[in-house]
Image 1 (cartoon, rainbow, N blue to C red):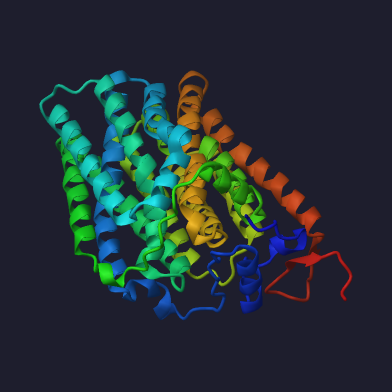
Image 2 (image 1 turned 180 degrees about the vertical axis):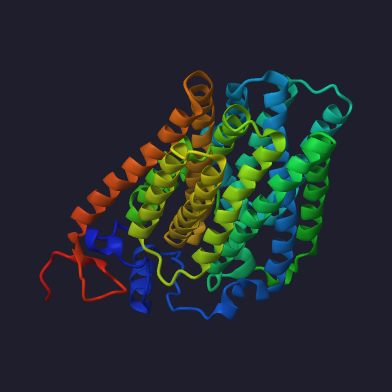
Length: 464
């Protein structure tokens, strides 16, 4: 049975910050137990401490190479569709086809991740991804590529993602164990954003110099390198979790468990708003690069790289988090939405690019915090299903948001689309923040005597 939801007062506190809390949660959730949160402030030399584990170091290297190539393919794919069709809506449709399978089949992928070896699932998925990227490269380099080819391959790649993402999320724990899980999640985010900084820039150069085909070919090679890295892992050093036995109602069990915990369902809710309205940013950046600033493929790659630069800073900052709080996750979501609204009002590309850096920072602070909170709040035996539902919301929401925002950008105005993209999540974060504050009896207090903390969040409840 899933443990009961924590009291409202506990929502604003660290998820688990003492041995007694962990023991209590374990008793409620037998036979599995939650992962504890390490809340002490780490020295700078331990910012990436999880990399001292050999298996995770190997995985991180392979992940970095794959992410650079994946970003190259994503940018090349979107720009190729824009060139072939001349339609921003078509770019949104490509995004929808790639992410729709996660929206429809995500929980099934989580059930598979709970029942089978994560390493083998990842090897299979990366092999299929390599084949799809190679097909795109061949079609593009021979000049036979058409929009429907990209649509079809994006759809199949989305089906591969259904299995890949839940297994990848849970496999991190098997690489590092519970002690370094939070740090490893932040390192993964840092790696992803560093790749996101390099990949779009390289894609812009390749698109300008030789076309999209070579970006697809690079991703095919990178997927093969990921399979090689997975083969190099020391199986005797993995923290392998016991596969969940097959039984009826596994998906319902995962959903009931998640809805019983505020530290899971509130991040889910915010992830839904962010996914639908604010995660299809590359679609809007394509519209701004082509229709507003007229900077071409190189400028499109640059704008994506600026977002990734801010996200890289956010990923590094997330490794320095001393405590993980639900209210801070909601705050980061609101700040991301606010930055997108400011970008829509930017008077020039210089100011637009500067705000994109800030947007990337707050987006990553939300994504890492939300991911960590959901994982740490989930027992190991059910984590694959919980994470698959989270990924279903986060990735599947883009299947709805991509075409919608692309249509608004094309038929109304890119600035209006960006205002909608940021405004809705910002309002949602404000609403959720007010609800959580009322549940936990919190209020803001201004203290002019404390220069370091002029504004504080304090309880309205009397002491004692």
